[in-house]
Amino acid sequence: MDSIIEVYIKDLIGGQADGFGLFIVNGKTLKCFIPEWLHDGWYDREKGEKNLSLIGSKIEASISLLNLREIEKNENNEKGIEYAPSIGVNYHIVKGKVLKKMGEVKYLIDCGVPIGFGPTRRKLENGDYIIATGRLDIKLIK
Image (cartoon, rainbow, N blue to C red; front, top):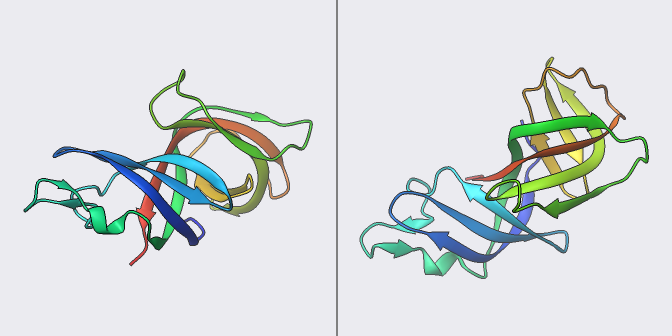
């Protein structure tokens, strides 16, 4: 569903159950949850620690906005992304333009970084500007 982008891994944080990381994309630092923490090589089970060899490297990944809290129209046609820890861990407020509608309830938004999101009950069209709040998830593209 998402756009494949190049991501620089600044840091990884996590343990035996789950993890998240700090990633730099288009000059922006994003804190993303890693749903495949234990399965895609982010965590070294033999050593019992994060995979240190990934830190400082570039990977291809996709980023999605999940666990959506709110979506509303953005009348100011703004683009941007900001970390919102007061809402939840790894939560961000995303302001951007709907680039692509994929099915009835899934979308790709440009907020300076291409981010997939959905499903949502709100009807949106290509070119709509929105403000959405949710958790950023990152997926390694192999």
